[in-house]
Length: 118
Length: 107
Image (cartoon, rainbow over all chains, first blue to last red; front, top):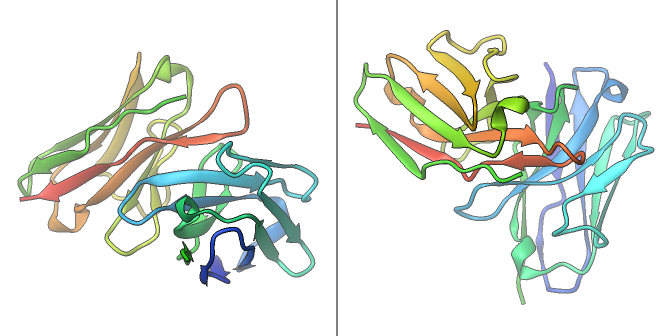
């Protein structure tokens, strides 16, 4: 069964850092680019960033560029998101999602909640 | 790219629901659609304008012409009640862009 499972969500103070993880199973992890998508409470979906198949390329939305970085370990089938200088507006459920190769997401995790509050 | 969706659509069971997604020169892009039921992660229901992933009923169909893509759900069921999002790849970058979402209410 193909699966993505996020973890690491927490309540953090503004300005602090947090690392999220996404564990994959049931498919050949290294064959797919992976993305992070977030959803603020009661709001729509917002693309956060992507990591290429081999981890050599990443790109992020303007709203997080310079504060967020992502990496992957293809030997452990894991993706991580390092979030620095967190802001209240970063509060959201963070999903990892698999890129089928055609620009769309064919597999999503259940998400992990990040709350940034003092 | 900016994608515009109506905030809500209501339809009676058994009727047909049309959910639109508007964007500049949208027909030049592949549009993908996601369904998100309350408290759940999104799931892909249409990719590349009109293709259905395995397991998605034929009641779900899509089209894309000029500046508007449409997700059509025929013979709507109570279980179709959800938020629906369109999505494209920004032509000038690797960005993925989502529409604001449309809440489908089954009366």
